[in-house]
Image (cartoon, rainbow, N blue to C red; front, side):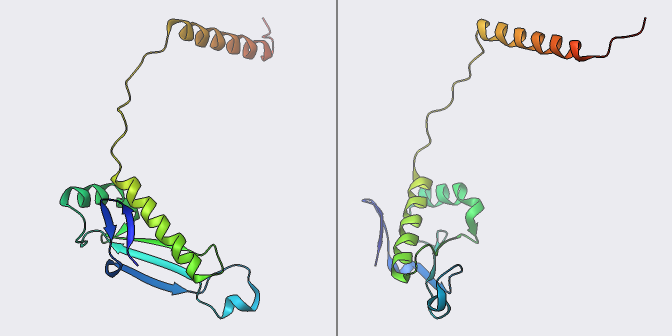
Length: 140
């Protein structure tokens, strides 16, 4: 089943790698016999559906999540393997969508207002006075 990330980008099922294992957590006897934990992996570096710009953008933005150009998503929330597959695919689609999203507007640097500067200094003076009053009186 192909993964449609956006109308312009669909990851073919042949590029997705699946691994199944036993899930941790509660579930009684059932959890010991079924491989409900799902891991889906996608090789971004070797993908044929990405343009070079998209590939470079994903490789730089998802750098910390990648191992040799491969992103891996795990899902084990549900007891059903089928449901965990759907969750893993949705997580992968969200991750790729966020990785390909354009940058937001640049932050415009601002200076504090004169009034906020005055309030800041008044608060510092007040704190200083409070701490000076806590001191032990000097013996002179």
